Amino acid sequence: MLIAATAVVVVGAGAGVGSWFASKSSAAATTGITTTTTVQTVATGTITQTVAATGTIEPASQADLNFAVSGHVTAVNVTAGQTVTAGQSLATVDPTVLNAALVQAQATLASDQAQLATDEAASASSTQIALDNANIASAETQVTTAQTAANNANLVSSITGTVASVNLTVGQQVAGSASSGSATSGSTGSSGSGSGSGSSASSGSGSSGSGSFGGGSSGGASSSSSSASSSSAASSSSSAQVVVVSTGSYIVNTSVSSTSVSQVQVGNQATITITGSTTPVYGTVGSVGLLASTTSGVSSFPVVIDVTGSPAGLYGGTSANVSIIVKELQDVIVVPTTAITYSGGATTVTLDTNGTKSTQAVTIGPASGGSTQVLSGLAVGQRIYVTTVSFRGALGTGRTGAGGFGGGGFGGGGGFGGGGGAGRFGG
Image (cartoon, rainbow, N blue to C red; front, side, top):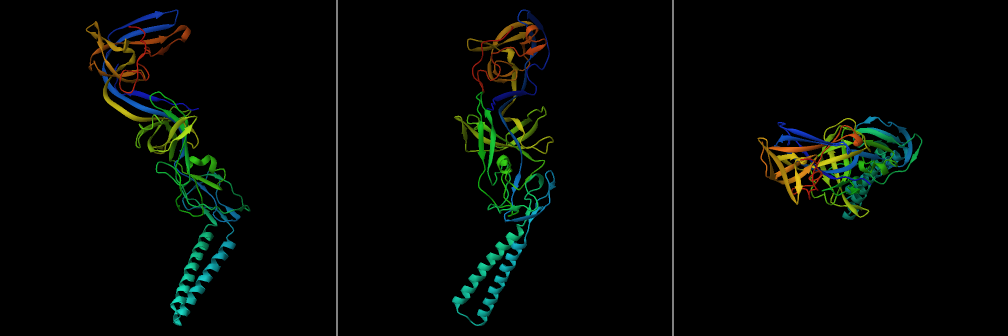
């Protein structure tokens, strides 16, 4: 099960940017814990609320192509990994029977047109003229159908991209596919079908599952092909005769929980980190599905992230962690979470006024990443005591933790958070 969570990240100039006025340390050798108290200057910063999810990188478009007519394969013109353009020939079947049918249909049309001319010259009855015109209309339809079938002896790519797989060999007998058209996956929807998998959670609740999106069908550049969106590649590419995927253009198929979906909007910015990589890429929310998928009693909604630009190192089918920015609080007062003390439901900080300590009640907002927004009770430029905790000895030399279990993470007395914790180390 894939689990994700909402995070609130502080960026920009936060509390702790300023002068260091005093410090003190205390060591508990038996526990391996060292606390350090410093004085920092209160400043402003930006707190960002995000919804985290996991998903799968996919090409922005994928065409699963099949011959629309039956016949023996006479040529396979491409191999996996080859770059192709829209309209380029990929393979052909023997057109002999198809061309003969076209010639016959054209001959029938010519005969019907000649019969009409003869009847008109002989001043035939209106009933006969109507019958002649009906025969011509039927013959024209037959010519169009035969011409399409003859054209479909040539399988062409409906998109520009890279050949992902070829499941054809010369001499192979293929059966024509009843479906036709091309499909493109992404934020605008597509023909065929698609599915997104992943998980997300909001306000600390986790869920997982898979969502689906897309549906219906539409005509494409080549009637000799059938295709499905890239998000259904796992099932469709195994049966498609040729699969072509777009290059340099990607999406992330993911999903968010029912508690988070109302926060996510089309156009929200997102940070995408490929599993195993430390370098993020960026994108925007392209679509948010309206129909939930429920797995083990947990509902999730499909979300498609459009990756910005053409970043290198992306490959279809790889997993990624996604952080969707759903709210930003700019130029707000932020302080290190460890500066806040929780007691009896009250939240306070310790001020330093020319070396004199005093307790100041504060109202706090969202907190994460070691910082907390202060809604009231502090002003920019004031100095506060901040305690950090280092773990040494039995717990690992040199490991530094963010002390103060109260108020960290998603806690806090206001904003997005819930209740605070029991207190903090040091003083």
